[in-house]
Amino acid sequence: MERLEELQDRSRKRRALLAKQFCLCHVDRLSDLLHSRDELRRRQEAVAATESGDKWQSIAKRFASAVARVRAREGEGESERRTDKTDDKKEGQTGLDGTTVYKDSTTFLKGTQSANPHNDYCQHFLDTGQRPQNFIRDAGIADRFEEYPKLKELIRLKELQLRARATPPMYLKCDLETFDVKSLDMKFDVILVNPPLEEYQRRASGVTFTQRPWRWEEIVKLELENVASPRSFMFLWCGSAEGLNWGRDCLRKWGFRRCEDICWIKTNFKNPGATPYTEPNAVFQHCKEHCLMGIRGTVRRSTDTDFIHSNVDIDLIITEEPPYGSTEKPSEIFSIVEHFCLGRRRLYLFGDDSTVRPGWLTLGPDLSSSNYSKDVYNSYFDKSEEVVLGFHQDVDNLRPKSPPPKVKQTRSMAQAPAQPPPVGMQAGYGMAPMNPGYPPTYHPM
Image (cartoon, rainbow, N blue to C red; front, side, top):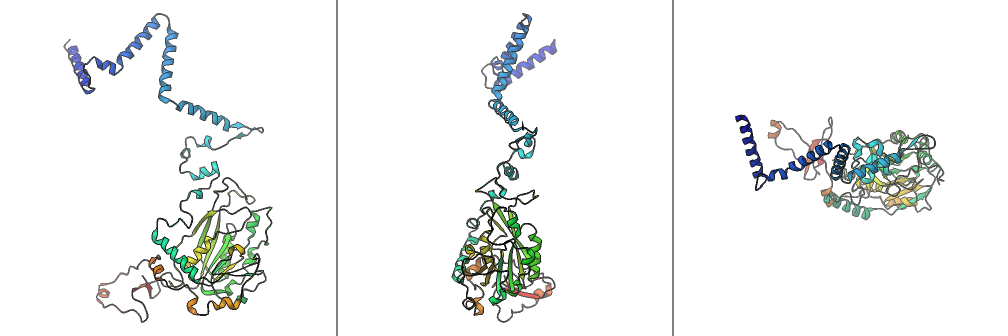
């Protein structure tokens, strides 16, 4: 008896504490707040209905009440799920031949990470046809340096210098299969080659080309080593198939060492989902091409600053895919070449009227006319200082430079007096080894 009274007293104190915490004026209001009286009333009614023989009516009433509560909680979620189920049935319709037809990949994404497609650009490509590279920000050269004011100003100054120092555009209509490039009587600093590869015509069946396709066995026979300067660069468009290996062979035969691979990534903003060409037995779509870069001679970015400016551009070009059957290349390749190499003697092979550009000599059979004169063109480079663009103080201040070398000096070396630089060297030059095994060399910091 005493135990019962103790439990009742504890229950009263607990209810009083709860009523105080819920800011109720009386303990009896606690039952209304916790809905305990309503629940008790529902139970009593169910018992009364069962005792009176109305058992099935009570069950139906409780079931309807439960359904109403579930619908109130879920709201529109139930209708959306029913819609999804209906769509799934439509996606999985059976065709006339007995195979199941699916309109998209929703059926296969359930329970996977790709069910949340916000960052799954590969799945987005399968559903919409838009390539992942379509969503790369600031891919164009006009917007690429918006967040880098120094590089933006550097590009502006370089463009002004290039326009001021560019030679008038010259072009020569000729058949490169029979033309002797040695007759140009000039050594070029940059050679850009865009051959009409078999690969291009193989991917564009039904298109009539103005040039016959060149096989790589024919391209490698071009004697370009006879028109390349002792220190020069070669840029060779080689497609995305067998040309990657053949291109390296060509560079080696012409006396160049492959040092870079510029990749052209093609977007499809204007025509998403279309597959204009695929090679026989191909699994993937072609959406890139490669331009191999070769170097001839010894050129170091820290010492030969009169000839090259490194790290100005990137080795990636992202532009819209050209029309079906077109072999046109992005004009940004010219900007990359001109920003990098300061040599003014530039040769473009297999060009047409659209590739005629100031500062370049263009050769090709697709040109409509010619204005090339060997004497006039060679006169632009009579003086040795005319071969390169020349020094520009603002450009030199803004261009990316090699980091200063970290030279570990011993205590005796630190105490020894510093040796003066050689005669003729400018102030601000430091001494550091270029490569292991080479003697120290002076280079701009």
